[in-house]
Amino acid sequence: MSDNSVEIVQQIRLQFEALLARVQVSSGEPPSAYAMERRLVTDLLELGRLLLQCFFCSQHTVLEGVESVEVGGKQLPLHEQKRRSIRSVFGKITFTRGYYYEAKAKQGYHLLDARLNLPTGRTSDLLREWRSLLACYNAYRKTGKTLVSILRQQHSVRAIEDDIERDCNLAETFCEQRPVPDPSSEDSVLVVQADGKGVPLVGQKQGKERVRLGKGEKSGRKKEAIATAVYTIEPCIRTPQQVTDSLFKSAPSGQQNAPPDVQPVGEANTNKKRKRPSNKWLWATFKGKSAAIALAKKQAIGREGKHVSARVALTDGAAPLQYQMLKQLPAYTLILDVIHAIEYLWKAANGLYGEKSPKREAWVKERVLLMLSGKTQQIIDEFRKLATAPDCKKRASSALLSTAGYYERNLPYMRYDMYLEKGWPIGTGVIEGACRHLIKDRCELSGMRWTIPGAEALLHLRSIAENDDWEEFEAYRQERRKREVYGNVLKIERCTTIERAAIEAKKVAADCKAA
Image (cartoon, rainbow, N blue to C red; front, side, top):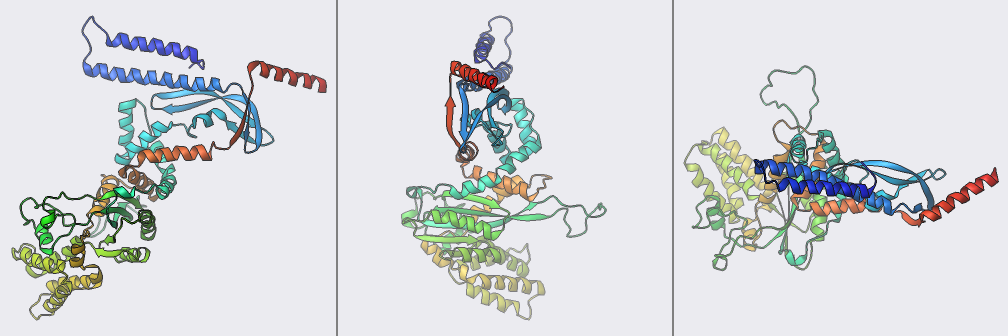
């Protein structure tokens, strides 16, 4: 490819004229619309490649008069012209740029790279962005096939993995400095939720492979990723009866499927639409519960303000997660997810009546209403009494005592009557959904196994995409490179062609005199 922008412009014009002639065909049988559209995509990609090539050549021409640059306090003279190739969305672009180098300083610099903030690797920023974004939602091999179909370019799984892993630490720093939402867009209840989800890891083969696993054995091992969510929500006052009815699908008409956390209640709220969480932020990491909650805490602190009237933390009954919530968010009211609490009632009902008994639903519903009315201690006492009755079977006794013990340990976090009266959320639906679509839907596709660094990097970028922060992250990545890699040029010395010839003549004269 020529480095002369004039020649490239001529090629562009010829190519464009050929495109016009192709779409204005008037004789013979025309191609199908699909065939024409596909051909135009191919031709436009080639036209884009020529245009981008022209851009690089013209920028190189602009810098032809630069004789030296001052980098980090050291003057680097023009040493030679070097060729460079970059793979763009249009195809491979090859161009020339000046290389500034001082042997004593052992330092080199490409001024055109700095001027255009070019990537240090071989892939353009836009192509890398598309590649990474596709990989957040699709298997790496499928991402490669998609790019082949659209851009007619082959992309290896290894190249896509490298893109993702290189951005892992950068994603964390971006998250920490992420701008907080405008207080005017926030609601009054600040909520933090956390939960864990296992991700299948690449396993080490030990000994001879077995044809069939034993009972309870699994083919691989998992590592728990901790997902966190921070958001604000508008209070929504409900009564225990209304939440119970909604859970058992016997609510009044029009409220059959309303979840317990956002169901409108009372005369003032009958025509009110359910309020969704505001400015929801999600994150997932393998660094453990403490690190995950610490990062969520930073996000929550940034969202404090006069608009916040209540602070709520929601988890399931996992004691280590509850411990971290209480330790790092002491000003928050910790609430046990009501759905997890109700699951224990179903286990107790199954122990008492069996899994197919029609008596179970009414029995569970009655105790759900007691629980939501702030009478969990009454349920605990009842279950302990039933479990010690002479006619209580061993299975039922075990289920009843297990539920009673679970409730007793979590009793401080089960004051649902107070939570409902204040309009606070009592379910972890937000984080349960995040564990499913943020982690499971991507990391547990058929046959997938992960290394921890690879899964960590993917979950970070996937979190950024789910938070609708992708464009801001890409701008942050480019700005950081511009500052850290290219931001140390202090002075550029230019000269004309005549001045350059005079400088060369002086150098030759000086050399002759010295000889």
